[in-house]
Image (tube, rainbow, N blue to C red; front, side, top):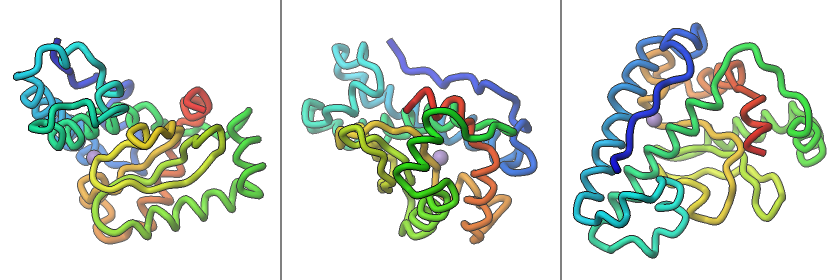
Length: 196
Ligand code: MN
């Protein structure tokens, strides 16, 4: 069973002007596709692993044969991270419900959370992701390098933002703070609440 590039639940231009059409087209059609292809390639030698979901593979990387472990970590991570990311993007959804309550409680208000999350994201050196995760039932903001996913550390991703330059450079160049501001305008809080 091959891993497949998931269809986007919206058009490439649906997140304009916050995330531009061209970036979405390349990000989904080229970058994500490449992670999928390279994951499938890595699994060619191991038919038994081909039946596992990307999440299952990442949850216990120690069980992955050593010769493909790095490839699964990087490309499996790339596939899972991006599949997750597309789902949590949507315009015009306000934070509400249980997730808003939990954020307010944990971070002393939504604005404090937004600032902490953005600062952590902007402060990440190199390529990676910033996440809101559940760690033993507690909300926590963490960053991961490259395509590492929090589930490899036993944490549950609730919200995440791609901080690889390919996700913002066409429109924002070095202005990562503007990208983060834009990201906060396209968070699908209904999906985030589901994840929570
Ligand atoms: Mn990306």
